[in-house]
Length: 485
Ligand code: ADP
Ligand code: MG
Image 1 (tube, rainbow, N blue to C red):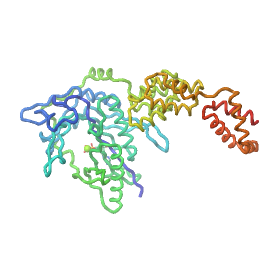
Image 2 (image 1 turned 45 degrees about the vertical axis):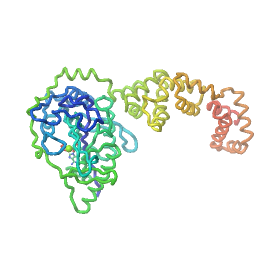
Image 3 (image 1 turned 30 degrees about the horizontal axis):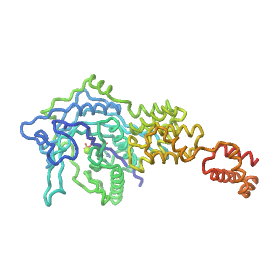
Image 4 (image 1 turned 120 degrees about the vertical axis):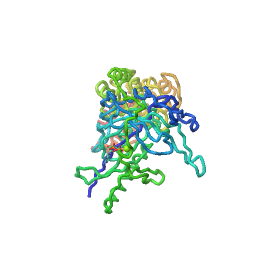
């Protein structure tokens, strides 16, 4: 039997407001337990929630960014359940009328071996408060409750069950993460719980229309865990069904150490939560003016920037997507091309995605903190363009620039000068070297003359080596051909 995997994602994005969604208590991470929970968060008798405008503004910005409908009127509802970290006995969320409806997220995803633009449809995004946290490690045989997180503003973003593999779900999650960070509505810190994914997973025989029974894997806070957890869950479900069993709808937790999911609770249905509109909060009304105000605050979106990069700089869709994954990378690219000119745009993109990115990865630094500025890199690329150095030597110069951490805009020139790396373009000098190489490599010369084109490349290699890599490659090629013919 061939199986098809079906995945829908629910992502909790912590909104970057300074205070909580319904109280004035701070949201800063890492404070001592229970020092950032005010009477509203503690649900003391008589307290009332007050909507945080900043959270609404961020939800509007998200809706605009994914082309969704922003509800002119949405409603807060109480989701009732008991848990020690939820002192009210209910979570304030949105149920029937969420603030954001529909929309889609577009990102680069590899299909049939090559990366293509791909969209995942969003169902909705709603505002809600986070719960507190149980601390099992701090006390022996006891569990502590930290209510600092209680009331932290969340935007829960829900997709249609449209994804068909763990890889696709991860690509979606990465793109969503990049977008909310780009918008500045979330700090994106996954270790601190600012971006958590729940993956709903089911399988069905290929060709079957109706969806299989799903399990929901909760609270995946790394892309790695997300991928592993889904792959594991898919295998578990297929094995279960093939052994004659059936999947039971349940909420499961992923254990990254054991690399397995285990059942947390069999899934409750919506009616178990006894949702009803929260009488303490009036409906959330969003006017056209509020939407216009948020639109005006927003800078260019990644989608628009990608399209512009393709149009204005002649980049491929792929290059443009990679460069617009973060605002800082895009800004670096534009600063670079502003100096090198548009005819070096493709080369600039290659350098950013190649040497610069691998350095950033190796040293785990952000592009903002790169020791080689866009202006410095521009000088280096100009030296390739005007034949002062070859592309190969430029890579070495770049590595030295990175090491030196100099502020000098002309650091590339300084290194080329100091290390004597200037390309040899003097015909006389090159000819002398080539004569020596031909004399020393008679075998290759004969092979070439008997029709072996490969021998020519070997001779070019020898000649470049004799110039210590400094020979102008085009000239070396030309002179060699002339001498051999
Ligand atoms: P709940 O709110 O109970 O978690 P929803 O119906 O709102 O359930 O769906 C939550 C998520 O699960 C959505 O992303 C949806 O696309 C996804 N989903 C629903 N049914 C399936 C299924 N059979 N297989 C995989 N994902 C599913
Ligand atoms: Mg759910």
